[in-house]
Length: 310
Image (cartoon, rainbow, N blue to C red; front, side):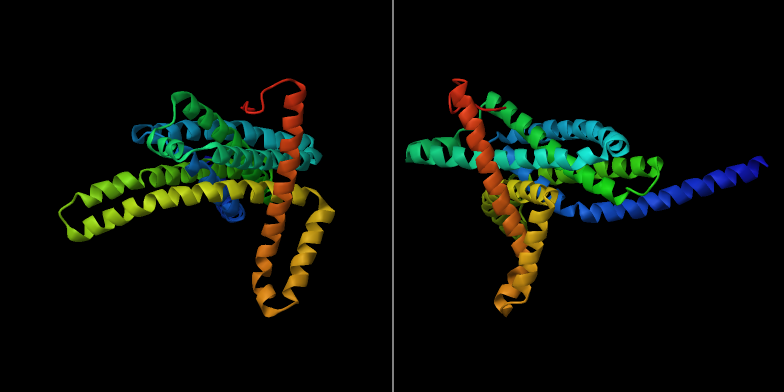
């Protein structure tokens, strides 16, 4: 009898693990897009950081990300059980925050670009960021990670919505751990590319030297590209969350994409990109309105325009 009970227990465990494996793969596939945006957004946070501070900064944000998910996983399960109607409004608020952050970055970049002299621009490139700026970047990255993590958890929750609590908890936990380790492991690898290139360029092997120099040449362009992609991702992800929360707008975007497929061959070829473009435009508009509102409130309260919200 005890042996039969043990076999039954092992069979149940195997069944649960098999289901969790399948559901985790489905959830991972659905969240892959957000994962890419998360990677781009976080990789840009270390630009200007001293070489010996790059990994500590990545580790600090990674720890914050783990804490975010320790909050989000139980919260998602509670909301799903007791207030499922609140999931969409909360996600839309998060999406609006991402768009606001993106617009604030653009406004800061363009306002400073007009004021900067060539000497100041060179100074910014050659002089690393201060400790206070580094701390603010870490806080900002953790805030942004919270929104993106919430999106990942929400997508995962929709994948396991019909499962029992045990399977939901296991899948959410696996996704939370794998996504965090994956994103920040890749970010750590990206920010240390130049060190790897330098190491290779100093080896005796001719091929290693060529490869090292190529990596050293490409690394700054990669970081700049990730910075641009990271800002664009704020509008794409944030705008996508907002439009999905407004059914008529989401259906309109889908309809426009379908209409585009039925036009000329050239337009039809780019039709799959139309939803992303329109999501991004909606995100830019929503972020601009949010930034104008935030700036207006600051002026009414007598807060200097350049003061950070973080």
